[in-house]
Length: 491
Image (cartoon, rainbow, N blue to C red):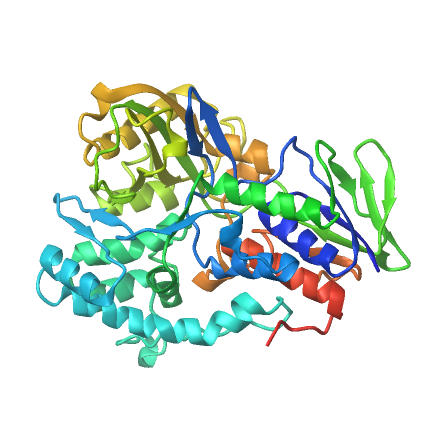
């Protein structure tokens, strides 16, 4: 039985802690903040409850596996899941609205009805090609720990290859233009990359795996919000004997005889350990990527029956929006936003009210006094900047939520500066999943660190961002510690 110290109580770190404790190890988690869950948090006020971090679950099999492996119980015995159908409704700049039903026939019919004959077939044919990406990368980029081996080359079978002798792998934007024909369908594809802070003009064609995963495995709502999942994972840790110490930052990971030997807490206390699992962001001050801005709207009047849970309202000008997000153009342009209208009685004080969240991908936070940042930033502590952005997001939400302004009781804002304070990620940046095939700039930390006895877990470790990927990192680290450094995942 090993003594294991876990730094951070994010979802991935807790998932690893629960698995390690179930395997017989003595596990202690030190979390710098006063709560667990990392970026999976909620705001509760006046009977309203909102997710302030991730609000939907993809690849729920990762969490089903956790509860089966740590207690032989189904996930659904701890939380209630409901698959969204349609998975989303997309509203384009010309006013066209297209739902994305979960069935293939429904998807083809909806796209043909909204975007014209042939649109559905082109989209589903693209998803078939994206399955080649999933088949080629699922194991090395999701189910195996990250090693020093190079990631798989982009396996997307594009209809057309560009560059000298057509050997250059196309970008996602080029795939969208070549294979989908309609600019609205192209915007639909690109929105999956933008949601994770990836520029579709430079993201590889393999990023098509993101809509494939969503269409194939669904988008799921957790009753009570994603915080309910964090609560369930925390309870599982406690049940398995994990000690979780909140409000206790870790200052250092000492190395003796070439091996990590424990942690030094901020108060100077040294805690010995046979293995140290680090769930912190490894980037100091200049994390790459983009962040998210969320506006939480408390409305009078109940949610209309049949209102879609998720609506993606596309930017009125795609090129201008991308320039503001990735090229440093000022002022920030009206972005693509996601409007969530959950059908969840626990999120509102009664049936005569509605809780609506509006989220957009934005540049990360850096104070106006900071200079020399190697990527586009915004000062999200500036009230005028926040107010202007809130106005843009509310205007977009008003196109799909009737009488929004008249129904508004109050609003709250969760900015990248808030996310930085809560998670420690510089600028409040959001980690990218490895499955997206992101450039090396976004590559995650290896689960097995170069220093023996040290491991990395969570969204900033392999296999990357999002609750499912973070949960998988916990499984990978638990396997490495329990089975040894040559373990390469379950078969």
